[in-house]
Image 1 (cartoon, rainbow, N blue to C red):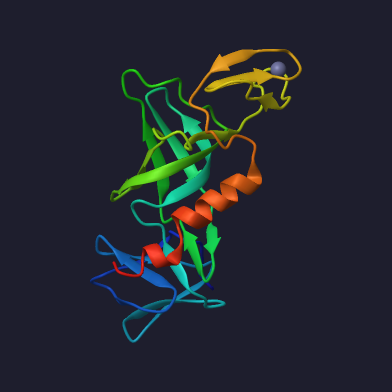
Image 2: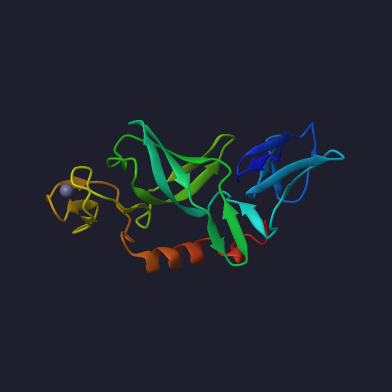
Length: 195
Ligand SMILES: [Zn+2]
């Protein structure tokens, strides 16, 4: 039976196989960088599929993701893939935001955030949203599902029921072109060439 894997799935350990095409070694585990069929042969682990330049996100990159779970003091973010020509970046693990004293209220599940990878840990990317560009970029009203407007810094207001909240909102809220430009600038390949 073919073993279909997704980016970030562990397909073997370092003891079992040598990482090869479509894979990435981190913390003794071999992860898939692609969606495809995982194979191990002559002790090589690889993922068959359309091969292109795929890399995992690294520390200091900026990412977009959807908040999946808000557990009051910690929230988990599903990080979206990003194509910065010619490289496709994939997340091997979830992003994690930890609430700190004095922080503005955290986003809720379903909100889309722009964040900075502060550190890449074994199980998570630790995300930071302190700079003005980072924070919530898209959100809907939790009561009536209408779009939220951003009338002033760190304020979200429902266009329909007028619910108003103070949250950490990105300067680039609801501005797809500016977000795209920001990601391209901050994650450009030339920035990573010398690492
Ligand atoms: Zn509303």
